[in-house]
Length: 153
Picture 1: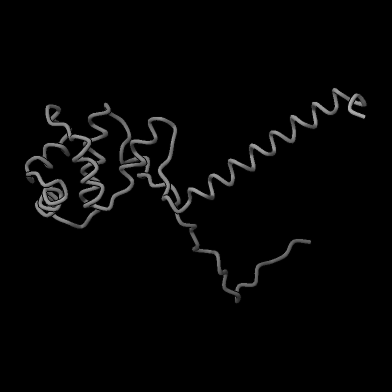
Picture 2: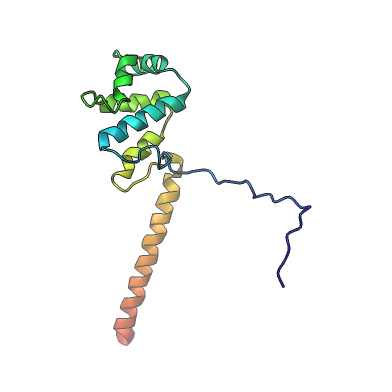
């Protein structure tokens, strides 16, 4: 006999979405095209998500780096047509910091099969890795004991 849902009782978890742990863009943000086109798209998306104007982002980056960054430079970095203008690593780091768009880190990590997670999760990940290693060692120990048999007595 199947249970019926009571229509008068609210479902507490109906609209619940667990928080995303890894910083990453939605798949459609950087899909298709060459790498330089993908980079331009994610840079543009990061600037858009920040809620700041490109002029303000440029000013904030200039302060962060103690060097001049212009709105025109940001426009060039975010344009797929401007293949001759590439963002430098130091400016990429500044862009992450002034926009707060950590999805840019995830974009870079994905090319190597990694994810970017907040540092507060580092010990949780280390604990999981340690437990996995201990479980593997236990499996090896059991296999060796099975092969050695009574020789240890």
